[in-house]
Image (cartoon, rainbow, N blue to C red; front, side, top):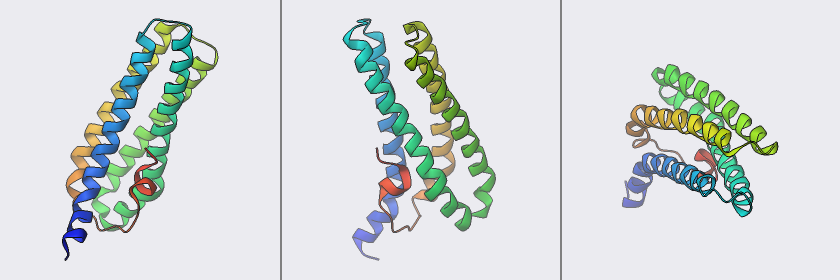
Length: 155
């Protein structure tokens, strides 16, 4: 095995952790825009950040559901219950993202938007930690000839 091949093997666990960190950062930027208190330009920034964050998080989960999880299920059948739980989290997060989007669309008060982001942050962080505990070791051995964006979403 060449060094490049070995790097590729180790990279999937790092790619997942990095994707999660970028989503955490996007949520932080979104919250900062909301917390700025300026209802004029901040509302525009907030819409941009929220829509960007929502799109990125949704794309990450769809990519996992479509590309990563079927591959893991096929190679490690013992992971199927874990993957089922992760997919349930994805559905919950999608529902929360939909509620946030509707609140943004009707110009909900800042306090309500903060509550939506708080709920998203809680489930997202719990989901990421569980996923990392369950999958990072396995991903460090995954041989998969694919681009990270195809597997983990265009972050």
